[in-house]
Length: 355
Ligand code: ASP
Image 1 (cartoon, rainbow, N blue to C red):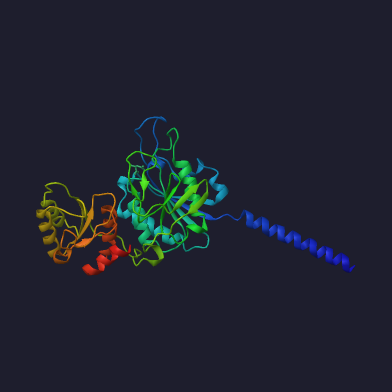
Image 2 (cartoon, protein in one colour):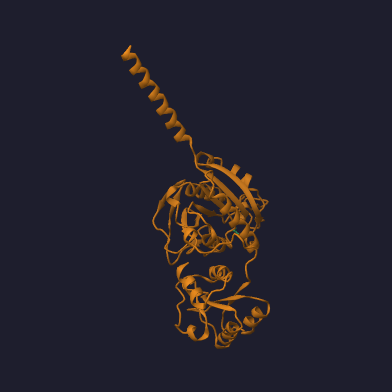
């Protein structure tokens, strides 16, 4: 009798253990895909033509094109917008950030993937990096070829993005961009080719890791402040201040700076030559903009290297800010957020050293 009871209990234990093991095996992470448009959602009339329309395909159709992503995660799609990222705006970026901040605190969401055009992906990625309030993975993805192209790159990029978003090792690294097998950090990546599939590079900081068919290898953790360590909060913000970017060149007309100020810019980023330089006339115009209360940041049109303070320009005397490692388009995002509250020049300069 006693022997029989022991045998029964052992059997029950084995059944319970196998049922819970099976349940653990089938419990997949929950990922929400927020779609904004871009070439990844683009369509052309044939598979081999270069002309196409961005933002023509819905998120449900994109998910249906890669059914195996459902083996990795429970996925749900939401359409935030459906635009080519040349038409991305501060308004859509705010809507996207607020939706992510609504979703991520929930126990039923393990990560977010954002589909986006590549033209301005680095701007939205950097913006989200500064305003998302969670260390759960936020992964951005796009493609260089439309969904209808021969050898479209979108489906595998989306698969890999889901693979990164479900990976516990992706946590705490800020907003990541996954394209063409590479995992890169919002702070450091930039678009380098108008057409090549391998367009995103992080020239100064290198890769965060590599993604291969849902398996990832992480090499680096970005050192800059982001997400949970960021002081920026857009929860009560409905509009960002105007910040213009002006491109410096030989004989740059200084009245571009005056025009920006006259049209209401609260900040100006100069995509300077070399180490954030501009001609004497523009420097004088920049100094007079500063006297009117406009914050002027010197960045560079050169793709690599940082812009340092007081190198060929006396920033201390003229009241200018140096962008450090941020290119003009990311310097503009940081400055727009910085201008949401009163800050001294030194405080703004420190933001450029920390983010
Ligand atoms: N113009 C497109 C966009 O940024 C290009 C792309 O997605 O690759 O939406």
